[in-house]
Length: 318
Image 1 (cartoon, rainbow, N blue to C red):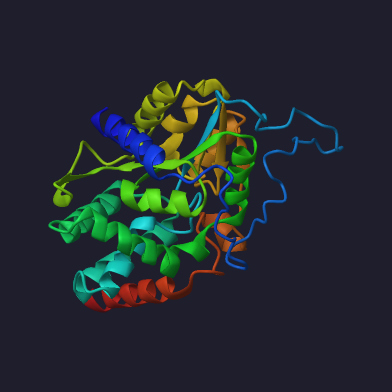
Image 2: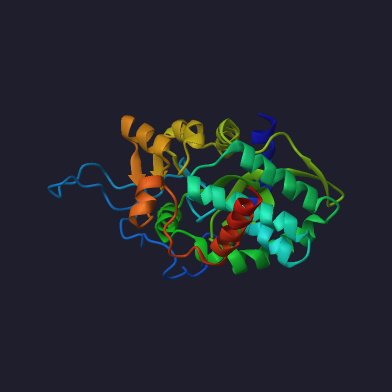
């Protein structure tokens, strides 16, 4: 509860003070990095096999009681934001090669499994907290902007971005909801032209990180609490809102809204979505992606090389 409320409060403050106007231009879409061109944008009505319109257009233009909530890792972005952030900090000598190998191994596991593992994610968060302890929030925000350009911009799923843009075009607010640090999530939201972000809140005193969290990481049920708290503060009708995620861990958040979407879903979420007649979108390509739920080989880039090296190192030590 504390994590959700803290995240909602931080998100609203950041959105009010830093978010660009709704008509501000968004970052240009990176070509050729992922499948999904957004041609099936959410504003188009769903159709059945005979081409007949099955339901009205969504989102509904001008519905100011509705908003959209997007998970980040593997929903909006290929891979996990915290791992990309770790690579950028290593490049700036925030930590040693041994710690980079751990980040790379965690990223490799994430790609191979295609789902979030609480133990791996907790280890990554603990590593990140120890690394940023004693640094200024303003310093990490500035570095985060650079890291976005270096490692994250080309890993945005165009199809998911088109869905988010459809909500913005309908006059609705769009929020990222992620276990990643709220500062990192806020940078990504701003660069994509979204309203703001709900994320894990790291404690700071006088603008300096203490190495502790405010509440728990924003993961699983905590995401649902954050969305509920934000919706109450924004006077939204959750039945008219939409939520998007790839992970079964986010079923509590998806179940809150009237329009849940499974995006690039893991096996458990795909099964749950089909059982509950939720909409599905899959922007991955390739047989392997379909079978085990990991991003396609295209666009893996440098992080795959680092991950492969970490795997090789792990095997030699066995």
